[in-house]
Amino acid sequence: MIEKSITIRLSGGLEARPIAMLVQVASQHESSVYIEAEGKKVNAKSIMGMMSLALGTGESVNVTVSGSDEEEAMADIEEYLSGNKQ
Image (tube, rainbow, N blue to C red; front, side):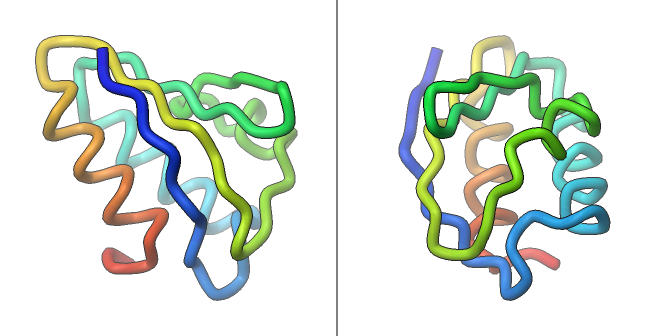
C-alpha cells in the first residue's frame, strides 16, 4: 500500500470532465485507488463518489493505492492531478 498527499493543479479543479478522466486513469489499473479529502474517503474509480468531493485547484488530497500495480497507479494519478497529463 502506498499513501501520498497530492495537491490538485488542474486549472479548473475537479469538475465533471476532469473527474471522468481521473476515473479512467484510475480504472486502467488493477490496484484499488482511494482519494480522501476533508475526512471523506471515496473510490477513485467511482465517478459519483469523486463528484461528491467537489475538489478545486490548490486543494490537497490523500491518495491511497493498494495492489499489484500500485506504484504505476500512484505515478499516473499523481501525474494527472498535478496537471502534467491532460
